[in-house]
Image (tube, rainbow, N blue to C red; front, side, top):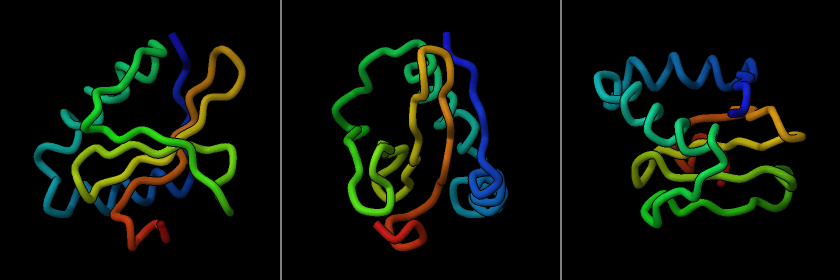
Length: 93
């Protein structure tokens, strides 16, 4: 089981999304994905998990909803770092 670390930007993004249109369901949506990521299990195909390039080389993203993206990376064998959360346009993807 990996330990979750939250970046400062992720914390800011989370607060913004919590007050947005996914506010009531955000925790449930995130928990489903995070449970799989923490356990190093394969994400479902609709999560569209893939590696990023450019300024996010070394990171991955997955879709929580069609336009709600989680950027993360796994470091070592025990850390899951949550980096950003938002829409494609908010994250510059």
